[in-house]
Image 1 (cartoon, rainbow, N blue to C red):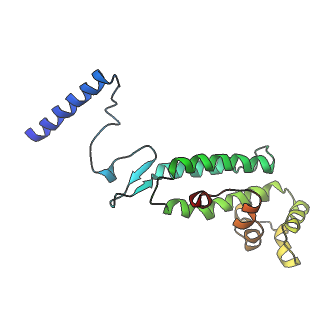
Image 2 (cartoon, rainbow, N blue to C red; image 1 turned 180 degrees about the horizontal axis):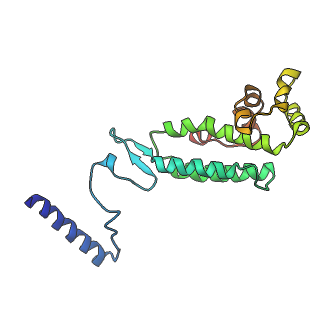
Image 3 (tube, one colour; image 1 turned 45 degrees about the vertical axis):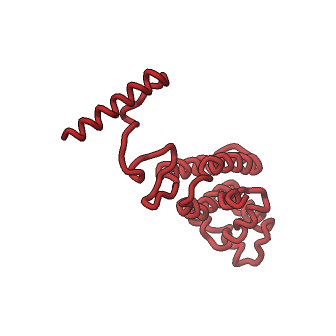
Length: 186
């Protein structure tokens, strides 16, 4: 009991010193002590092996932002969508490049590309537009082009092998899209 009160006294004196000499307000709700893997840092977390990782809340905010950026209802050209995305992913990666545990980011890559394909599918509007765009992307054969007649939703169509090939990671890179693993290699 006395060790706990000694710790509380030490914390109170430290808080007082910070507020007096550094003229900073200490937020007791956000300040605290505990095991490294139990504490949160701005967007990061440390695992039990003391590797820097991205906090789950940050990954969820990334997902929300991807959904917002790749919403087909936005009135932007394809180049503007690409530029907005590239600007966001550069800034995001600039902050989180310190992360050593990058598995959550790698797991998001396929999900992210599917959102991009979904957005473009919706922006191609109808069967004629989808056929034209698929042909421009090099899709040949009546069977492969038959996906343009699909009555499935955009999210389901974005998972179709034909669309995955037409708007593959390589094709998207060719059009100037950046992905986190591209930035990690720089």
